[in-house]
Amino acid sequence: MATASPTITQTVRLHRAQQAFRLDPALARGFVGGRGSGKTWAGAYDLIRRAMSGPRDATYGVASPTYTILDDTTLPTFGALARRLGVWRGLRASPRPNVRLARGVTVRFRSAEEPDKMRGPNLSGYWLDEASLMAEDAYTVALGCLREGGRQGWLSATFTPKGYGHWTYSVFGRPRPDVALFTAHTADNPFNPPGFAQTLLEQYGPQLARQELAGEWVSLEGAEWPADYFDHAAFWFEAWPAHLAVKVLSLDPSKGTDSRRGDYSAFVRYGVTTDGTEYVEADLRRDRDGQQIVHDGLRHVREFQPDRLACETNTFQQLFQFLFESEGRKQAIGFLWEPVENYAPKVCRIRGLTLPLAKRSLRFKANSPGTAMLVQQLRDFPGADHDDGPDALAQARQVALKLWDGRD
Image (cartoon, rainbow, N blue to C red; front, side):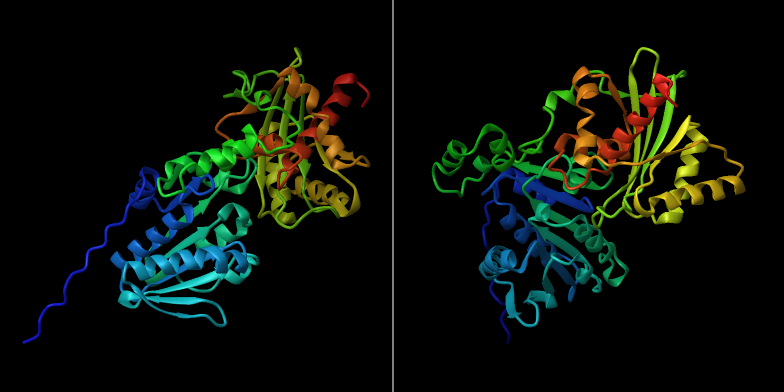
């Protein structure tokens, strides 16, 4: 007569943030924390537990920023924990690591160095370890894989924050439907060596300590402008004023010779009242081709009715004038085109925003994702990954000042 296999119970201790991250049902969950706050351990444990309670024979994905980090940290942490929990069934190391767990589960380990190579498999869940060291494309590609067996999968990301301008802040740092964020301080992890957090604190400056220990989003070290330029009571506005002395719609199509892969096309609506108060609203997207830029631009013209539509005409961007005017005639949308030739470096153009920021004369549209992204890029300038929004804003002010001074 067969006897039942004995049940083995493992006790696993979690600190409060790890436990909350582990139990939350949101589609996308972020665990942001300082050095040694238990981020990678929490991500590994969470995946294992979900895999052991999810569908049999399911497949999951794990990505690290590089294969070096994968080999040195992510995979060893995951493997040690899976063995401890008794669910490890083997590793196929070549050509890329695939781990087999109990219940027929497969976990594919990959590098995010080239996000397009993460495409392909249908997965039940995806864990991005050290996500703030990855490009945003890794996140979007991972989301598109979460469809195994016709079921919506989940995504988790563990990381240390990298400033307001980073994509992880856009995704996890601001309230969004079905997205949850959990924060842990280095000192929250009771499993670190005694005095570990204090030792790091003594070596870091206050700003770096907030990021690297407290897991807070902060303006990047070396940011051009102090944080209080963005935190005053009148910074955000709800509704556009009824009467504006000058209105400019500015376009940075991000198609020039100095553009980077993944840059944003940026529209900025800019208006100034007779008392010199400046109002800004932005529309930033990474997925617009030339046709979509023209379509969206004419919509902005129709809605905002600017005095000028300004666009940089350096290199081949001057072709946009022909495209806008041609499509504008078809749609019976009139506007005055303002070509802008830029010869000064972009960083110098953007630094022209120092005076209005210091004077607190700029107001930014509340409840606008594109405007929030523009503000993030301003906070982290010149160290942000992208500066398309600030450049479009600087261009709008340049054209508006010409109109204001009557030199046009």
